[in-house]
Image 1 (cartoon, rainbow, N blue to C red):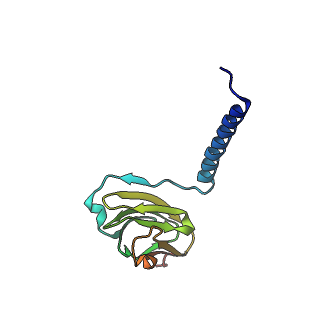
Image 2: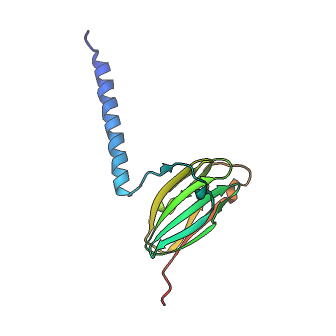
Image 3: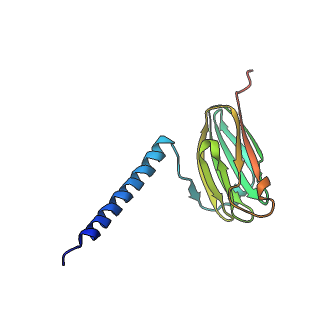
Length: 152
């Protein structure tokens, strides 16, 4: 059975477009140094909001989303810190977005998502919910405040 010329063109065009798509994903991943959040097994230890300092430049943030807030709502860290964000929800699905750092995760009840971020520049990094979660959704915000360490 012989294949029609138009069918061949469609198949070749489809393969070229898929190749371009895969190349674009890999290029963007390397250029913007993005990381895919990982899902961890559920553990109640992650549901208590807190900030742990492991050493001078390494922090763990256990962020808990609930209607209509992130806890902790303000996170203070020094410039140059590497932060591991652990994220969960107490109720419905929420979004977790730090636009300046290209971080985008989902907070899902009964699940833990994790990603790591390095904060090289001082400033205030806004965390917003990007998943509609009810009438107070527009007020669901938090901040990562990055400062230079105080001299002793």
